Length: 162
View 1 (spheres, rainbow, N blue to C red):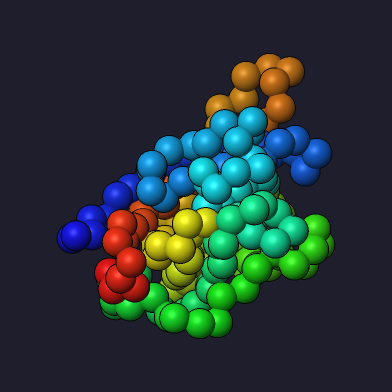
View 2 (cartoon, rainbow, N blue to C red):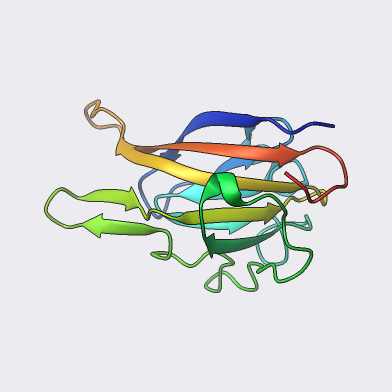
């Protein structure tokens, strides 16, 4: 099956005590929190913390590699070397590894040349590039949220080629 590049935006909670937002590459959608103990999601986000659906964070077989490179030049997902959420404090994707924080503007800017490679919860492959992170417009007493814009390529068959 051919792969396609998709661009997506998801809104995630700003507070570190709020629920994670879960995303499925296969279904190209946000997954309900009631399905957090399932294989229906591949990664979760809250503020700047990523989860992958495996080991300490979920029942899936997801793993992640954050590598330097150009998104369009990543044509094959590695067959090994994926990191997992081994404990609640040892995440596959280290906080701060993928963004620069500006304390004056309080902005999170994705680092250029960083490509996320995922083995999904159900054993397929996806690559992802964060394009931007912005604040949701302030709406009064509602907690602030972040909007993540990213592009990704999902391989729906058992191949690791993009």
